[in-house]
Structures are given as C-alpha cells and as structure tokens.
Image 1 (spheres, helix red, strand yellow):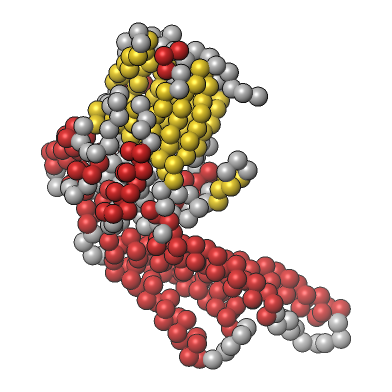
Image 2 (cartoon, rainbow, N blue to C red):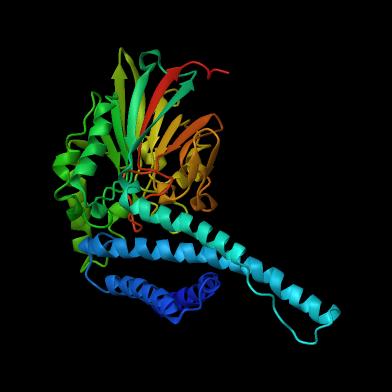
Length: 408
C-alpha cells in the first residue's frame, strides 16, 4: 500500500511537471522518453527495496536508488510549484474574461515559455545539487573550529582542545580512501581529547568489519571517549530473537573497546591536569518523541560535584533542550549529533543557516548558547539513507576552551 501511495503521488507530480516541457514541444517521442525515465526511476526504487540490502540498511544499490529518486522528485516538485503558481493566475484571468469580456467561450490563456523556462532553471538547481551531493558532497569533510569562553574553567585547561565526530554510520560507506582522508584530517588536529557522540553503525555491529582498523588509528593524549546513538541499539532491524539483538549490542560495545575507545554508558570520567580537573560525562541515547530513552543523566553524573567543570556527551540534542539545559548540576558544554543537518541545506558561515531539519529540531547544527550553557551539534561524519550531502558537509568539530569572558 505504501508503494502504491508513493507511486500515485509521484505520477501526479510527474504529470504536472511535464506541462513545463510540453510548452516547448508536444512531440510524442519526447513525452514517451520523459515518462519512460520516470518509470525507470520509481521502478528501480521499488526493486531495490525488495532486494536483500547489506546489513539491512541503506547502502549499495538501495542508497543510490534513493538518491536518484530524490533528485528527480525534488526537481519535479519545484517544476510543479511554478506551474501551479502560473495556473493560479491563468484560471482567474480566464474567468474574468468570461464574465466581463466579449468572448462567450471560457478559454484559459496559454502557458508562457518564459515561465516554463524559469521553472526548468529552478528545478535544475536541486536536481544537480542532489546528484553532486552523491558524487562529491558526502565525502567533502570540513573542520569547523570554535572557541568557547568560561569564567569558571580551571586554569590548567585554558586552551584545551577537543575534537568531535559523530554519526559515522559505517554501513553506508563505500570508499575507503575517502574515509581514510576524513580520519587523517581528524588526526591532524592533534587535540588533547577526541570524543565520538553516537551512531557508529546503521543497524549491525558487523558493519564495522573492514573499518575497525582505520578508526583504531584515532587517538589523543587524554584518550578517545564515545557514547551510543539511537541506531547503535539495533532497534531498526528485525532480529530473529532478543538474544541475537543483545549479542549484537555487546559486540558493538566490544568494538569500541577494540578500537581503544572508552565507551561511556551513563557514567563519567575525570581528566586531570596540573592538580585540576574537569568532568567528562557520557549518557546513553535519550531522544524526544519516539526515540530510545536509555540515557540517565542523574546516574551518569554520580560522583561529579556541582563545582566541577562538566562536559556532557549526549547523542540527541533534544535531550539538552528537555533535561540538560536547566539541570541543577550545571553542564557547561554538551556535545551532540544525531540530526546530520538533514544532509541538506544552505549555510553561509556567520550569516545564514537553513535546513528543513530545523522545523523538527531547535538545535540542529553548530554552537548554541542558552542559560549560560553551550551545546555543539555536530553535522555528522557519515550519511544515512540519501547517500550524499548538499550544503551541509561532513564535519569534524574542534572546540578550544578558554578561561575568561567572551570578547565583545
């Protein structure tokens, strides 16, 4: 039924979008070619989703089928909106002419080539962008650097640097050289501490086979610390038994250990330097709505004093909004991921930032400050479902802690 509904929506959009091309040519062969390509795109999507997929995820042919479908579908939606806008003008004009004109017939004015040309030009932007995002954007790693100021930061940690990656989703990867480049870029930052904020895999621990050695190369003087994200629990896979699901999670936890990462499961560690310390607190996934709520902030913070400077690792930024931001124990900096910035949007650093995901998440990419506390929402290292990124690039965050007040 879901496929039938999707195909029906696609057909309606397709027919309406075709009107823009029909202005230029009514040749039957062009029409046949147009609808043949449309049929191939939707048929390939349905076919790929009815084939076994690697790790029951969105990699391989299934991911590419999603990407190609989105490129065509979004482009045609843009075409349809422009055509609809023209019809909103054309139809009333025909009605006015019928009522007040000399003609007795009801004739809708012809579509204008100028409007159709604009429509095709606008539709080409998301179409080309989504294809580019699959070809280049998904591995277009960026290092984003932030400096945050805290009056109560221990003096020994003035200038302390933390690198963060999130949302690896290793089951989606298909280019080892590109991933090696991203890992090497992370290593080049030479931060004091590296943190990973969840979603190592899409569904299964086995997705890390072939990638574990590469990610084992990540290190830092004060260690690599990690937490779990919603995908790491295997909740989106149909397991043959509860035991199999539990074994998968245990294997994934062991994978963190095998890579030399310190997995934090509602617990904390102290990092000491020159007789002073900061607390690093890691919670399991806690997400608003229907997402898993395994995170226990109170348990994770046991033994941490109010006066301690605290950094929290929490995968889903909705946790910060609902539980962390006003928690009695002041968590100075929270580091999250989860949103991927929807892997699609527009960013002009320092000026403008937009993505459809902002209508779901208040905090969805970058640094936010509220109630005297900060959160960094990492845009993610990997990708999921749509095998690309457009405007929201894969990210390595580097945060430098400074003692004192923020410069004016």
